Image (cartoon, rainbow, N blue to C red; front, side, top):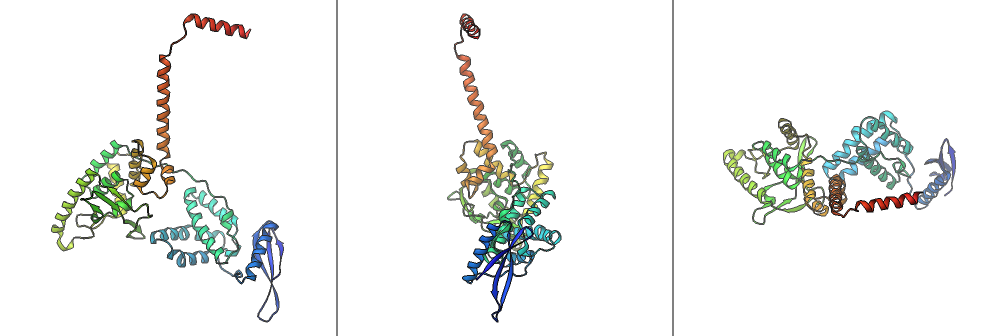
Length: 400
């Protein structure tokens, strides 16, 4: 198979000589998407190799948006959790696809250039999205285009060459132990009392505490196992497995939580008799009097309301998790211990989130070292007045 290169504008095109069904020679022009001839030559060699091995699929008319939707509904849907798929769908349908249709005139997949993706990030940054959010968009776009490369729909991935928006380091908010005690008092008797009390003691994620059932608690062995989570999916709430193997964990049953749960269980048994057949027997720890589980949107709303009514600093429910980790770290637990307790898959995640606490501890250590040596200096024997004068005379003589 023969091929050559020709430049149009700033880009190089491959000219591939092929034959039709009747044996007639034909030339096919294919955009290499390369501005440098050396890069275009590499693409040409790879393309000719694929043609010789019968693994090359000639570019066809396919819009970028059609490709994204096909990838989303036929590829991603079979490889990720339903809630993860929903996040992909949100990014593509709310952000990427509307931009491509309006700003890029529904560009063809084979015409997509790095500059198009770069301008998308610039546009979204100017619209108010954060660099961290756009990095998540980039993960979706890159994954889709990687699939396009594997399927021989495009020769290279244009998203590999763009400059990612700057990542902003996350600074978590957290409560002191005193503030948590105030919060516990404010939540007594409310529908979210159990969720707040348990989540703050264990540093659980919202979905983990809402998904906790009594059959995951062993009062005899004094253990509590995180094995299900309840998360919002569209307009519904679904129960699913924890987000990672490390999130699936068994923790010791804290004595005061054990006492609290035993009282809660007795109350639920009483409610079963009161509600009879109408009682929801799903077994969730955090539930309404009729046994039906709490929903995440109600938990968020009620949590904010309680904070406002009790003049507590505004934080997210998830920040209770950060509060737990922060005071554990301050009280001497290592990052590895906190990683295991919280169920982080990577200790790097733990270290990055709580770096501000680690820095604060180092500042305190530095101050203590400073104080120690300051005290020592105060007890040192100071030179007598005559020695000082002799030293000053020597310095004066040296200066002269």
